[in-house]
Image 1 (tube, rainbow, N blue to C red):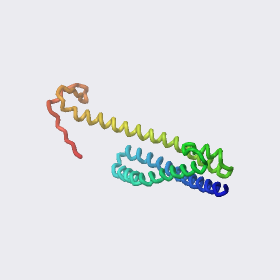
Image 2: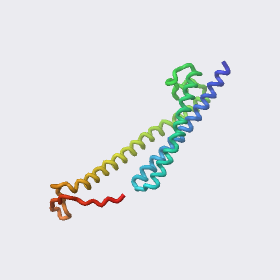
Image 3: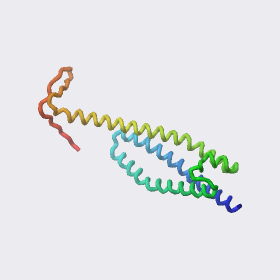
Image 4: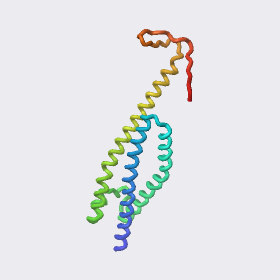
Length: 173
């Protein structure tokens, strides 16, 4: 019985270490989202490319980290004799001795606000990028639709003029 308790305690320590790394990853993701929005607004394509490359390079380590967390959670659920979906921070907080309970409470207190902030920042980034895409589509449509016959344009004095049959577009990539 004592060996089982030690095994459970070791798994919980591993799980807590994984959660600490999750906190670091969320904080890094928050800073990357802020930097991404900043670079999009500044239109700094070179730095944006480097940022996206670094995010892509980290995706494999993130995937490995996720697998490790699921593996430890599965092993912990086997040791506790419950379903792996039942192993939550709240369940561990209620079932463990005071020392481990305090550690889990601290991690839970850090993770909750970080996850909410990450969701908010993710939504802000999605909204910015969708607005950029919408604006670019409108801009391209207005540029490419100039060649249509029957299109009216307004000059600076507010008078209209009919477009010629053909538009010339100087596109430089």
